[in-house]
Image: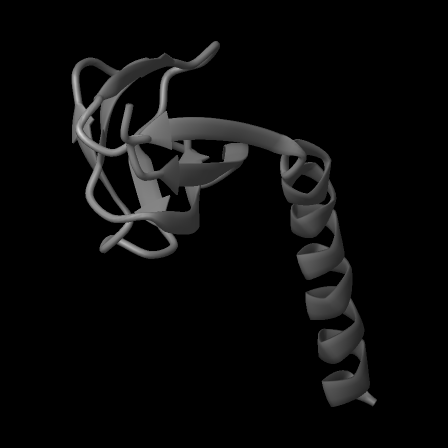
Length: 101
């Protein structure tokens, strides 16, 4: 019985964490290879998780801004987490190659 109760509590906790992540997942940033971009957040963050670090590099500028440096064409996500371990935002980053003129 205790195991079942713990499993239910864990499932509920994961569901509550996933709701804000899913709500923020529809934000997409498009970058071009060779062109960095500064990203400003509404709230301070402590940690950035990069889905695929071969696509984009993230350099902290302050507790609310980062420099995004595209490395290779592709798609990845960035998850910004605050000091309490709560997800601030989850962004999709699409990196495209520069078009030849």
